[in-house]
Image (cartoon, rainbow, N blue to C red):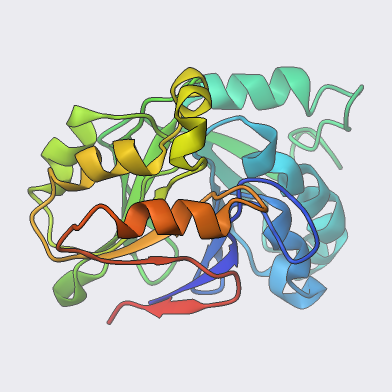
Amino acid sequence: MIVRVLGCSGSIASGFKTSSFLLDHDVLIDAGTGVADLPLDALVQIDHVLISHSHLDHIVSLALLADSVMRARAELGRGPIRVHALPETLAALQAHVFNGVIWPDFTRLPSAERPALQLVPFSVGDTLTLGLEQRRVEVLSAVHSVPAVGFAVDGGAAGWWVYTGDTAPNPLLWQRLRAMRVARLVIETTFSNDGARMAHISHHLCPEALGHELRQLAGPVDVHISHIKPGELDQVMADIARLELPHRIRALVAGERMRLD
């Protein structure tokens, strides 16, 4: 299995794309602006989209994806793209995006019988089995300003690839991760320590909070920092460097590929 980083930033600017990861060729984990860098033939192959939560930086490409691939997928007989998320997230998408005002309702277009998108609810703790390759993805707990989750991809003997999504300090997450063999951990740190108050208010992490969270994980683990705001990278990573943790920590870069085999 290969996870390709399409986007991993907390907002946009030249060279910065928001959260989106492609598992192999057919499973999209979050649908931020990084999805737009895929060519059309690659977009057509996406059969599943896992959404961590309803904030715009994680869903913005979903509506446009449906419009881009609807005709080609229909011609190939591929069926609808299955969008997996919490019931609250799916309700938000239906009410605020696919409502005919912000965007057409692609859960009923081009027809109710053969829509471009199919909404599929899950719960925290569920294990999804996706595609012909039968990849296993566990839904993890997250604490955010809206209902949210993270995801863990089972790499077998290689260990788990874990994406926390957007989350504030969360004891339940670390309780579960301590029982896993974590190979790679993608964890958000949106603000530097100077922005600790904003991180707390918005239910994100700053380096100080990150250090507290990572000390709950048996290490060392390869830790990849995501969701840093444009312009904050140097300060965030300097703050993290002072934490003196046993883990191997670096900032995630859009375009890189992580292999699990």
